Length: 60
Image (cartoon, rainbow, N blue to C red):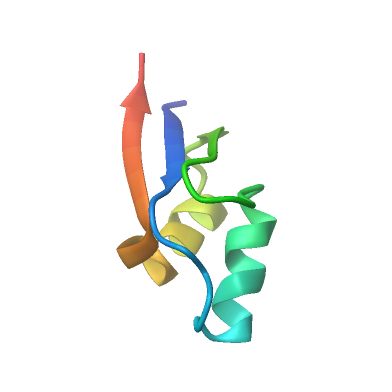
């Protein structure tokens, strides 16, 4: 399965509460924090919801 490095680029100040919880469920807290996840359907769905706040890269 592919691995994805997810980085939070923008602050969540002023963002809807549901989207904040989505960011939190991905394991991101502060700006420029990164996590690595498998590219499962649930993670990809979360990424689609908050794509404007994130940078996603494939890890080899």
